[in-house]
Picture (cartoon, rainbow, N blue to C red):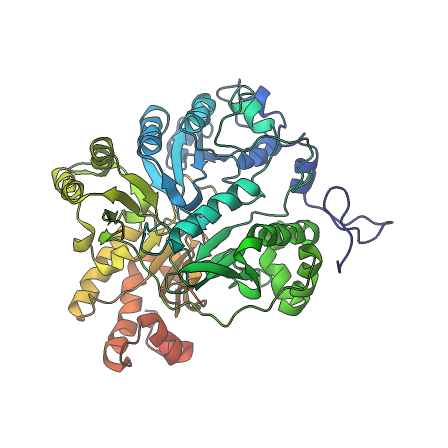
Length: 581
């Protein structure tokens, strides 16, 4: 193996006389007693926030301590301190759930959270507004459904993504989903702390048997940062394979997955004003057979464990290793972890992207129906009773439930009568059919941002619907309403909904101002570029309109808006921007 030898804790020796500098979080992990910290003790203090170490350790257990930022001003006026609450995230490989699992989560949302569920951009489910006194009951309740929160956050393998569509005509997607489940189980943390703290020491079938500590894969200090994996098909990159730390692009031969191109180094996070941080597209490193894919994934994670940056968390993602080393050095180092020189990647490119919305035959005599869920938020609001409608569908028709990477939901395994029943219940609850939702809304995504995310500097989920409404009007006026236009909005530059690959990326910059990006595409195979900075929210659509007008008159046949922006170039597009008054 090339490179420096790892220590017992998985950190390479660089200089025996001067150990490498480590961030404070690294020390917290090492001294945490395998992620226990003082969480168990602190849980008994209902109103007190967790200390800094426990706050970071909680992420590994699938929860973030957050502040209700909407309440901050009024509480300050009343002489009160911050109101703390928790986000709890379920890890659901490939987004697959039984009807009972979904209904169990729905019940918990009403009992312990803010009455909503939120589908994440990684095919999970989040609860928001959980109070500290309800945190243990919420996590225990999730485990009772045979789902888990362990590893949904933290410096470990996160939720493994795969195309959720239940196409049964060749078994390829089923194989991807099965492989996602195998990877999730193999790469899960093994600490007994999770069961001790949240389940009173009981072990449930949703989590692999705990092993002796320290962790056999992760060691005492786990990974330098989070690690995200996804499996995709060249003709359907619905999981954004190029945005993954580890992307596995399936190579299909004779209707079976023969192997995978291993792509490494995707990641969207950056920091405004810090040129050393940037979004990055995963690079093709090698090809491995289907039989070797779990071993290959473990090898990449071990390489990251041993060589990732443990001093600066802003530069600790594996994308910076790939960028700084280059593909050749990364491949050479990976060979030592694989135990052989890997085969070069196959010459395969991504060609398509599918939302999986509407009614589709599964290929086995059954149907599935994909429902568009605006920004993944499942809630009842006035006559729009989405949460009640989904519960009615799942209670009565018992479909398998699958979550998509664009925060939508699929009802699977429906016969013809059940498919009609889905549509009837949507109507009964004021829920639009996916076929009636505009293209721009169907292809849009936002992160939660304010009021729950502590990193958010701008609105996102609550702002994007109004922007989409404006875009719908503008596109209709220009005769462009049929265009597939990907719009993704985040409240900060960390890029949780992958805005740096989309046709239009809207990234929180400062309060009510945003950085606008254009030039990506829905295939997700390249980064977009910055169009303008510090754009007030009210001016986002007026700023984009001249570009859309030029696109209408100057586009090439079949050219998408993102492709047009890339071909036209930033200097010409910036000439169209409204002049400051």
